Length: 225
Length: 300
Image (cartoon, rainbow over all chains, first blue to last red; front, top):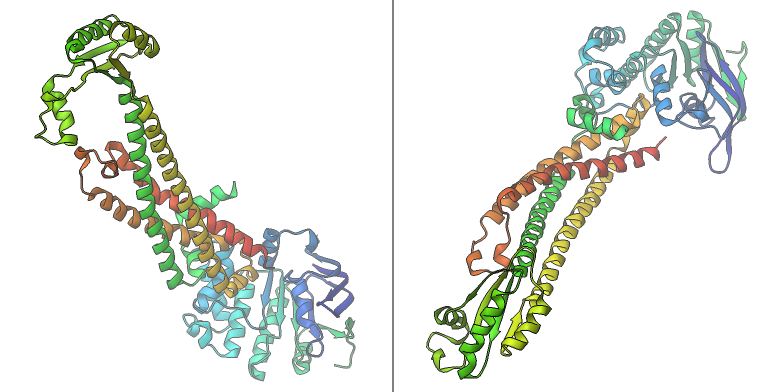
């Protein structure tokens, strides 16, 4: 589904990620952890073609990212739902319109998906705020709305970058439960977090594997968590 | 042919794509103003081109067919030479008609130059014969040779000497008018490109979000292109209406024959300005589309 072969990424001077190989199988649940600045967000961006690897090969749905043109990348992003660290909403549109944005930009008939949209907004518990503008939402509400937007296209892969970054523990668990539910529905889930408690809580609910970035390399974390 | 698909999409409109990009009040008004001002100027450039075109055609066709025979001879010989010249003209092929101007007509011609009180009958005024050629035309050199033999005081003036520079000047003016229209179109394209780039830069974050949720470049470009195309059309339509009104209200003094007062439209030419708003829209469409796709390519 997502496959990295000897992938390196360097910013201007130094190398941030070095010769990383990684395969995410369909239906798997992975956490990505590591200290701040270790390259978690960079690794995720490589997985939805927001960044291009400086060396190595990235296969997304068996397609080499280097061979994809801009329109193919756009279509790829409709198959990968992403919860961005800073949510990335359009602040002049309501929550419901933001959640429906992937539908409208891909030319789907939003009217025809209204029941799906309402169900999804209900599922993340945002019914009362659906007409609100994103800047008026709390951190947890923003993350839940972002999750709803990430799954509206019924993607095969869900990538979340620090979805519990600035929300309280209760809200973190709620978001985790939503992600676990999606995984049980067969979605491949990749979550970057530095919250070890969240990883422990997830391990109680699902067979999550933990990847750790250390010294520009990726390691499968053992039982120490 | 993606641009054709795009043009169609722009004409049809997409409310959702329009919603996705927040409205920009200031650049919108500037674009409207620029398009209006450019359309206003185009109306005048168009009027200039069409008017000088008419003038050049008229000079070239009407004047080319007329000539003047001037006979100046010692007092006693004038009548005899006029008679001889008329005979020559009668037997010259290619002349449709000719007419000896009588004294009253010559007076009227000279009056603007010498005033009404001059006693013209005491002056040795040459006699004039107006000549109109037929469709085939006559042989000017042959006529001159025959006149030299029969009426040595006759001088044939076929107006070429002063007509050709005028026709050339009118043609050059028409060219200048069309060049102005092209320059105006290019300037409008430049201004709209600048405005579009400003709008794209101001909406960089919106564009990034749209790309991240899977929008193709053409979808994002369309939201901008549609706006600028519609604005250019509306602005140009308003500028065109004001320009046409201004041309319509120009004081009409064409009977006095001024070249400047002939500036304006005649008959079907009044329909030409209707082309300005669609052309402005096409210019805006092309300029914005190129600017949008270029700046999108620079994003990931």
